[in-house]
Length: 144
Image (cartoon, rainbow, N blue to C red; front, side, top):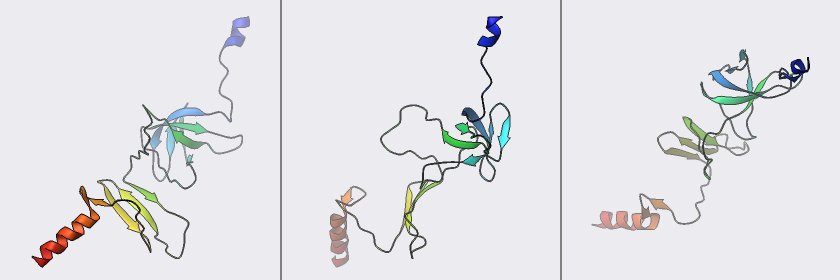
């Protein structure tokens, strides 16, 4: 009967599937048609990303390749700014003589800048006060 040919064909190898992360960190696993473990996690060059347990992700597999997590579903509107839900975000340039050179933004709004030189352009504010005003206020307090 012609209806038997109209049923949806099973997913062929090489296509993507949406799954839910069941293990994260050392070994990544996702629930697809069954739980797949040992997944590699891919992200854009220069970024390091670890999916969270319960997060919806896209898992793809090339023919003869190990399945990999290619990205996470973006819920709602995507803002102009980058939103990262993590303990910290590290921005690091090419490794130089300064091995630790980079910027780390930690949860709780702490930022750590590790660099030989720091160059700030534009107006610098410290708690709604320009840096110049802050320096003048501190000098006047010291001079009494």
